[in-house]
Amino acid sequence: MNAGMTEDHIGRWLFQEDGLVPGYLRAVDDTIEEVCFGTPPSDSARSVILPAFVNAHTHIGDAFAHPAPKGTVEDTVGPGGYKHRMLDSAGTVEKIAGMKASIDLMSRTGTGIFADFREEGADGANALHRVLAGRHIRGVVLGRPVSAENVKDEVQDLLRTCDGIAFSAVSDWPLEVLEATSRICRQSGKLFSLHASEVRRERIDDILSLKPDFVVHMTAAAEEDLVECARAGVPVVVCPTSNAFFNLYPDIPRLLDLGVTVALGTDNAMICRPDMLSEMRAAYALSRRFGGISAMDAISLATLSGRKVLNAEGQITTEMSVSDDLVAVDVEGEDPLLGLVSAAATAGVSAVAHRGKLRRPTLG
Image (cartoon, rainbow, N blue to C red):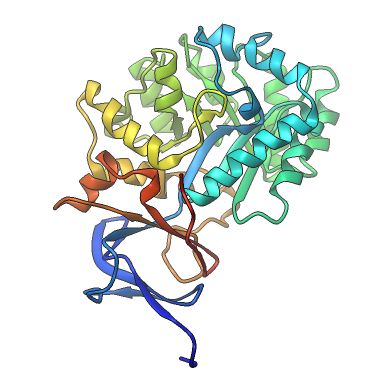
């Protein structure tokens, strides 16, 4: 090590697919030099090193409208509801400011990847692309056509810049439009997704016939619908904090018991901020009404599972190396896993690494 350079040790445990193992990061100045397995040095901070969080479902385009008024799903986010009235009335500068604030929050709280269901057609998708330029975070941008007319041309235009297409719900669009869009996405090697059975049960046959890469919510689904998702290998992204805003609760334990791949998202930024550490705590706490999930499961939902859900392009790794996106979270108590899911605060995000470069966020 050259004179004047500072070596630092970060963390006491590394989070792996099969649990925690002793380990730490060795950094020189702002560069991660090594992911070390084994007993950490005595000066290493009491933190857990995680793969960066994956926020598998967001709508950050409505962040400018936070906080949203209390109401039903239909009144708040449905077609013609509060959200869409706000999007129609707000200017581009206002929307971009809200998206920038959301991305800044995700970056400094340890999110490495987020998937956004971006409304407003090509204009909406392009605005998000502009915000993402030069940022230390990967945005999986899933665009949405403005209308069912000329949908083929609009979808093909969106797919020139977007990672895929995502719709509101199977009941909001003509089935033939959804089928055509799904087909175009598969032919293009792009993602196709939609919200499903959020407030009322929707026909699972219609949903699965679209061959979605994943669906969001399933809070009103029957057990046989979840069984069909598991059988078809269709992952489900759940959003406990946003769902609870509407007195809806995803049965995460049942989804996991049935073998469904489950990931977490924060949903509409006008309802809750895109803070995945907070969302992970919510998933752990709110799952108790259904019998509960383990701390290990809750952490996996916020990290490794999201990578599996969004990995259609085969470019998102679940490994932990010096070039991966990582986050260090300070913990207290005898059980570091339990500390993460029940007590770890956003201010405890002590370090974030992106492609080997270390940042120490200043958190409020």
